[in-house]
Length: 184
Image (tube, rainbow, N blue to C red; front, side, top):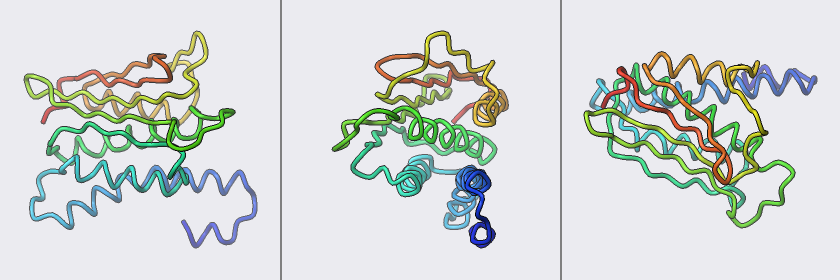
């Protein structure tokens, strides 16, 4: 994709190519973690999420502008769970970076995105992505939004047997509620 982008001049096509690269990176990172690990049956989520956040911070040049705060339990997930979870994280964090702080003067890490992944009782997990940005417009309905990112998050959540909800709480909070397939 990088070599192909060198021949493109249309900004809209370049942006689509860049977004595709960002969507592929979580899967590439999982494969890299599996290759580096002696344990091929699962992905250490702490060891996965932090490099994903580093990638997003570098890609969107948020260093010093947006802080990433994490509270991630020590969990190892099956690859079939880690891939959709990684893609959901990627979409939600990318959306926060791109839209939560637009038209707002952000400096010195006063803006933040908080990522939580917690093991609940019964080995169910909950995922939260929250920012202190501008929040969502009144009456926002994610199921009516015609975007690839929202469609991906909805379908990946269903794949995990979970669902997610959006809340305006001093910014946006996306909370994935546990489902029957999202187990540690």
